[in-house]
Figure 1 (spheres, rainbow, N blue to C red):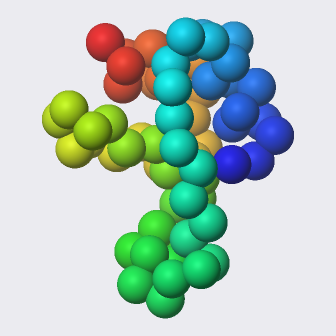
Figure 2: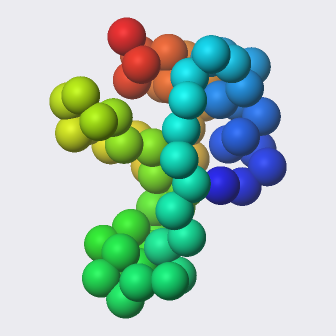
Length: 63
């Protein structure tokens, strides 16, 4: 996750737990997400939020 995205996530929702995956380690993941990385994906809804995103977009995504 880039520093900018991580800073926004920590500011908006410091309590949110997340797992980082290196999409470059998998050809399939890289082709799926490469142009949008970093990408946040909710486990409960399967929704995805790709970069770039701002604080308001992240709040809406998490609500």
